[in-house]
Length: 192
Image (cartoon, rainbow, N blue to C red; front, side, top):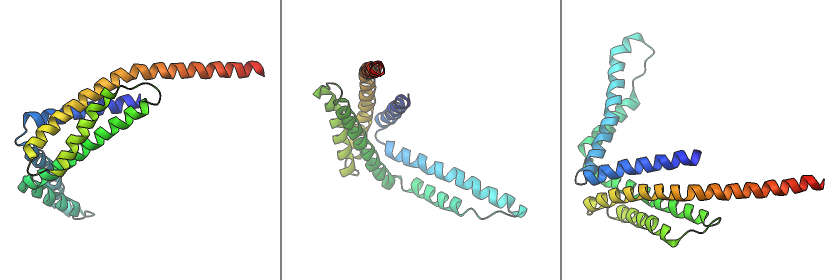
């Protein structure tokens, strides 16, 4: 059940990120960075305002971390292009890790059942898309974000297909293994 939850979480996250990147490709990086900046600024401002309003009550320390969050958030908002390049690299790394994770999962499944070579194509393409994103963040941001968006959607679809196809097979393998263990245990019990 734990693997099911993580698989579904990866699928949903990949779908959301993929849709945002495909629908708003030209400005997606900057919008994501500005949104992140606002996420830092709003709580920082709330903490700083709370300090100045309630400082007369005593036992309150100046919210130094709030000032740091405020400055970092403003930096994100003022320089979204710089951080969009960093975001491109980060998303590329996530895609690389996702592709590697799928390949490793397929290799692991290959130990207990036959896995067609076709299942390795999509994870390999996802890995390549991640590598492209990491090594060309500025010059190819539009293309990279489009590739990242499409790759995220393909990753979500591939993860879903892999999950549905191998979920049943893993249940069969587990059921067979349990039967085998139960039969051996019964024989051992009979021998005693």
